[in-house]
Amino acid sequence: MLYFFYFVLLLIYNETKGHNQRPIGLQEVFKWKQIEYDFDGVLYNSSTDDISAKKQENVTDADKFFIQYNNVPIGMEVYGDRVFITIPRRRHGIPSTLNYVKKSCDDSPALKPYPDTKSRSKFISVYRPRVDVCGRLWMVDTGHLEVPGERKQIQPPAIVVYDLKTDKQLFRYELKSTDLVNERSSAGLTSITIEVDKKSCNNAYAYINDLATEGMIVFSLKDMDSWRLDHRSFVHDERAMNFTAAGYVINWKDGLFSITLTDPDVNGKRKAFYHPLVSTQEFSINTELLKDKTKFLGHNTYIGERGNNTQSGSHDYHVPSRTIFYANVAQDAILCWNIDTEMTPENVAIVAQDHKKLAYISDLKVIGDEIYVLVNQIPKFIYSRFETEEYNYLIHRYRVFDLILGNSM
Ligand SMILES: *[C@@H]1O[C@H](CO)[C@@H](O)[C@H](O)[C@H]1NC(C)=O
Ligand SMILES: *[C@@H]1O[C@H](CO)[C@@H](O)[C@H](O)[C@H]1NC(C)=O
Ligand SMILES: *[C@@H]1O[C@H](CO)[C@@H](O)[C@H](O)[C@H]1NC(C)=O
Ligand SMILES: *[C@@H]1O[C@H](CO)[C@@H](O)[C@H](O)[C@H]1NC(C)=O
Image (spheres, rainbow, N blue to C red):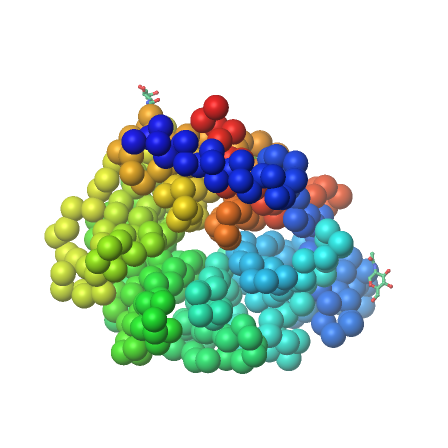
């Protein structure tokens, strides 16, 4: 079975390689030393940084518009020639949380607010937005200002969806109080996974992780309704704590972090694969069971152990190769696992590893036959200090078949 799979892959690979000659391995897309913004031609860069501005010497950080150092990108999505980059407000001086850049020759472009400059204060904190098959951009605005010691809920957490063809907002849905456990929940809503019935864009579900109070929120577009699911598999594993990421020991207790879906099977049913950040286990459930809150409870969703030091953030499924790729923060690596094999450490492979260029993969997305990763070294930001003259934030891409075949041969 496995040999057949690699054989088919090799055929596809040789087929695509001939048409598109590119060097194998990591391709740089963007790299930034520090983030700059372009607000309709007005640039915010190190020259306009409020920290260095003398005139503001007695103003508190909370009053500052732009503190360049505090702008750490965390989420990413790609649509056509646009790359979305989010900067959640976890410190003061972040002028815009939802931004985009155009793919171009400039490898360190200034960020522009999405959809436009005047919307830049509409959102408080957006983490990892996702585009669906209907050309819509989905995101959760946590509404939460997460500055340590000054945490504040500015507006209710909400799902916000844009039409990417018109850049108009389609709707904003405020989560219900019953979707949240306590005042910490909203800051844990760091990803969104969309399931759409290809025949009907209105028949869509969103699955949102809550890593802070360790649950899942399910949203039905057709019913404009949401509900919370709690399950032991959403909770972090104490035994998987204290791993090393980007050179720092991480003692976080983050629960459910990432949810990825397979393509529909012959009956039109999909599987969701998911894991907490602080865990080396993987879990799976048929999404039909997430769509009905009464059915999910009591199910055994454990499918196996990925292995030592496999603590991972985002993961995403590549349909043609039936493979899931993981942002493995504990080894500065990308892991892969073919879903037709048993989930055991022997079947989970490191396909890329780099202690500099993959030091904390904050987001990972399969786009066509490529994998995009956003690397941000965030443990260094939290526990130490960035060198502002080095490239601290990177977006790379890899070809899926390069990764799989590079590893298997
Ligand atoms: C910042 O932007 C201004 C234009 O608004 C430009 O004149 C200046 O050179 C830039 N500074 C840096 C350090 O890039
Ligand atoms: C800032 O505050 C200090 C101490 O209170 C004071 O001496 C100084 O004049 C103030 N500077 C400005 C620009 O207001
Ligand atoms: C993680 O570190 C804490 C504090 O040092 C310790 O109490 C705990 O036992 C450690 N857990 C693991 C799994 O290493
Ligand atoms: C994981 O680590 C433990 C303790 O170091 C070791 O006994 C075990 O063999 C390791 N498992 C794998 C799959 O490498």
